[in-house]
Image (cartoon, rainbow, N blue to C red):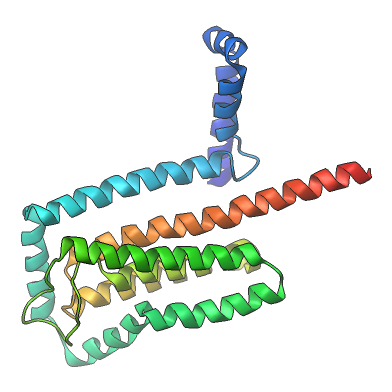
Length: 266
């Protein structure tokens, strides 16, 4: 899939380079055209991959804004939330509630610090300091965003269906946000630096399953509405992209410095 996208972009760039109007614009504005061309370069992260991440982040923000507006204006999504919560409550069983209660702990703050301490130790030993920064920026951003969003929206949690009592407001779901960013970053580190090709699909699908299970547990246990979880996943995805971008940009920068040093030695 990655090679297909890269080939399509390269074909488009070659076609555009032969259009007379674009050639004239390039001659008149070489700096602008060079900057735009670099944003679609498929050979390094700060080209096409970063462009796609920024585009995805923009779409993410628009979806999150629309969802938040729907909550504030009490539109159809609020009715759908209540219906879905009532449906799950009518199907709730004790043993499955216990299972989801165990799974939901993976979205707790303690999980962030346990995994974070383990990763920090490994990255310190391997001298991958920017990976540490990327992880903690992503998780710190999650914590701050959720805290201020809950206070700003001040949405009450579902009534009379909660499996256990939870303080604080409901929107967005902190557990869904944390699960998305935590397992998203873990999957990225494993996929990017540790995973051999046969195991990479397992890493990705494992992360997806854990994120969905933790997020769904919040609705099943009656402590969040579906839209709380959806918003949380969007916020978590946004901070995951921030963390990945930090790591990839710094890897690109370090590789560039190494190439320059090697060229000087040669």
